[in-house]
Image 1 (tube, rainbow, N blue to C red):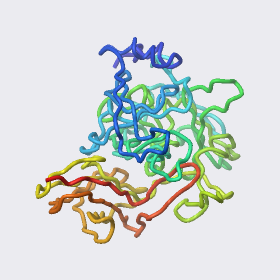
Image 2 (cartoon, rainbow, N blue to C red; image 1 turned 180 degrees about the vertical axis):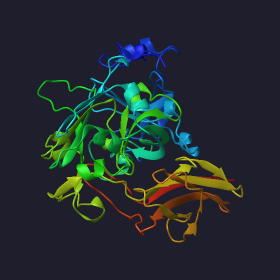
Image 3 (cartoon, helix red, strand yellow; image 1 turned 90 degrees about the vertical axis):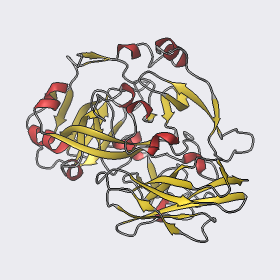
Length: 410
């Protein structure tokens, strides 16, 4: 591995698309408009997306370029692992790292510890037992564009997610090497990305000290057998399996063990949902009581057929999708081809790993011409399933039963 990585990103993070065009070896960024199947809000054109190609990435759907928000097309979810170059991208500030020198990079462990640490990339790779896990991740606002009434924020469809195999050091082992002091209540995590103004809060997220020490979170330095892509957190990234990606801090450079809980915009204001069943609220009367987003709710989505697909009458179709939860385990996925009146159990693929998605499939042969409304719902091992309605003002944690309309032609 080279000691200095990804110099071609050096000029891109602050300069927007024009710099990325110059940086891409394969030419310019594509500007193809595609229909994502999202119902169009009147006058907004919300069902249209643009393809864009960034360094180390294939063509992905671009929601924004400062900072880059890139969504994975559904076809990449037909495999157990999402390729690194197709994995979704979400940053909070345009000041993302554009060059990392592994000779000088350090992950610091400070605060309420006996032995503050300055861990190099090689330290993380060689001084701690390597752990391998396959884990599912998704943006907290994944599928936000389907909320009705529409809510503000990045209008993701279903592609702000991915499944990857990581290798890294246990967070627990790193904290034990530093020696967590009595009275510690949290560990917080910050990366190399920087806010635009000195007064803006760094993106920093906490875990309770018990969660940080439970042995399941890792500091990953490998993704699908390769170094992490720069846009997905090179050189190391925190993996918090079963929880939304807001906790998966990229380019992890600082761990602070705390005797008091962290308070900042990203904890007290952003990434919060109502304290109601299913995180749902009345659009006309938002709930004032909120709680931080944490674990993945039980959910299933269609991968194929894709939105607005046209299928042939009498031809067999394999319906495929993925189901996820917080690691409890998917027990059942049901599919309806008549808008929810009748349900059939889908076949579940093997369990890949505790915190991985689980893929499912079902064969279907439509017998009549017309429009069919397909639906899917998952149930996990504790009986948690999906609801018929959900709305919250942040557009977070969507787990509504998905409806997919397909046209059957002669």
